[in-house]
Image 1: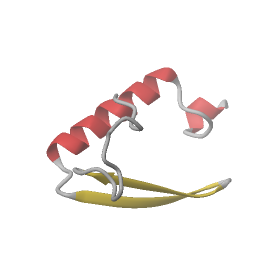
Image 2: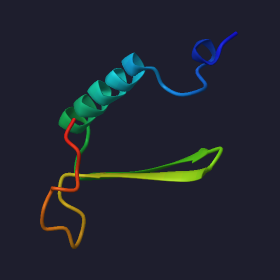
Image 3: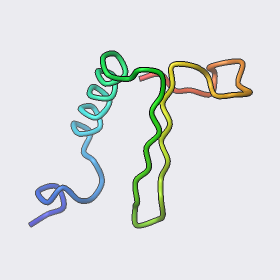
Length: 67
């Protein structure tokens, strides 16, 4: 059994595309003002913050990659 059939391992290109599509839908329809998430990984925790405004201290959106 390979990693793709068990849901482990890196995402395929199709899975990344699906993730971004779902994230776009979530932001358009379900994100109110902000969301703060945390998940554990083999390399330590990962923190994800989503907001309808720029982070404090940021005056430009240049550091963000559109998708």
